[in-house]
Image (cartoon, rainbow, N blue to C red; front, side, top):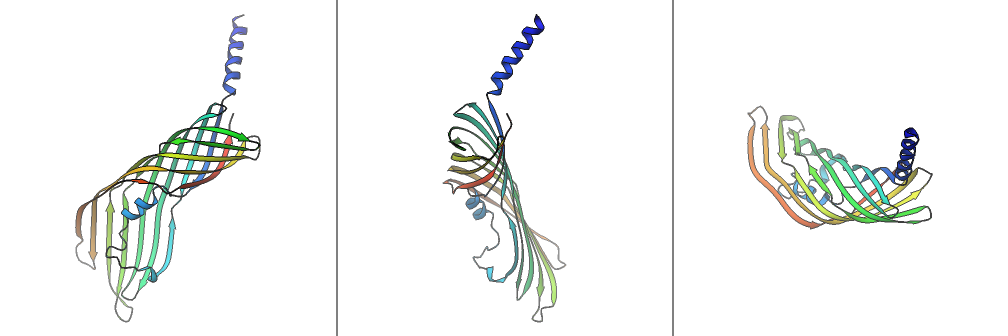
Length: 247
């Protein structure tokens, strides 16, 4: 009898639990929300306002964010979500102008943690989700290196200069509105697009350090305080991906 009661309780529990739905999504997005403050603050290419774009003959960059989205339906029209995002801003450039040939590398990474809550409504194969979220970004140290071969009028290399620069990272936190549209393509798979926008606060930087090596001379260190704080309305983040309906 005890075994029957235990099985019955377990069956009722599983039945109730199966009414809930857990979804896991894999997505890719731009850096729309944090792109402007990041690119404006962590930019050491043109300190004197001199535009050297005309001399760039090679340019490689990657500024995409990869996301894992977890969503749990509390009931048919209400769900809680968690988005984990990671991205890197890697830029590699070769700049060839009369007096020097420069190889420039930049690197910085970003980690996002974003809980949210929203409501949903179905329209045939489509499901529309909308709600509020709290995006939190952790920004790593910004690293910049510039190795330049200095040339004479005959384009012969006379010396090699190196500049290594670092700026402390920081964080961004905000409150967003999100709009998420899903299209069901099979019983357990959907594709989706999502738009995120809102208000964000940025606190970036701290120490700026630079080490310059000219030819065979000893490196010249330099350090100052460089900080950035701002409250701003964000540009939109646009995300696309695929969702797996687990149960």
